[in-house]
Amino acid sequence: MSHALALALLALDCAVRAWRIQLAIWTAGGRLGFRDALRLNLYGEAASTLTPNRLGGEPARFLGLNEARVRPVTSLVAIGVEVAAEWPVFMLVGAALVAYYVPDWQTAARHWLRRHRASATACGGSGAWPWPTCVARRGGCSAPARSSPSSASPPAP
Image 1: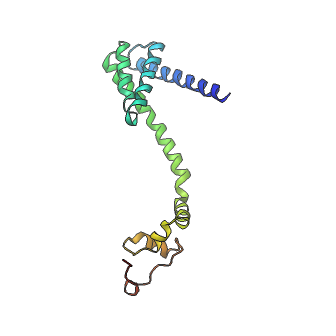
Image 2: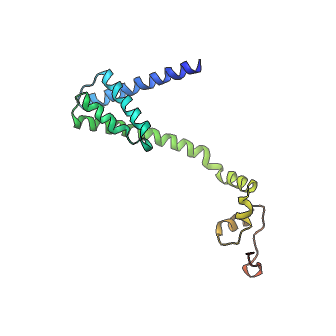
Image 3: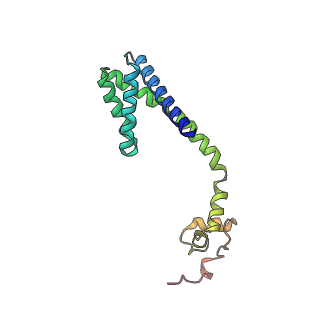
């Protein structure tokens, strides 16, 4: 059942992407059939999968639009509009992630440092790095901060 749902959602995603590029082409003054739009989006997905950082998707879509006999200027405008429309969505998702994870990052880091070897290194270190000393003075680590540099013993070789 879950496999069928996943395939149905994949088909819906492909159809919506095809309609979106059709709308962008129509808005830019061109014409594009549904089959051509679906084909160029599948080209783009295949190229995105095969290239690092999904960099090949937009050039493949551009080539698909050229195969569909859409003018290059119209193609560039449509692809630019489509890419620009994605950024507000990325910003909203990023803002939601920041709102969810950032408020308690210090508590989570303190908990992690206490439970791992980094707590011994960071909080009981030689004092060459000022941040662990500051955290130790605020009570963030279990190791006490040194009172003064003159009373500290030299580090062991």
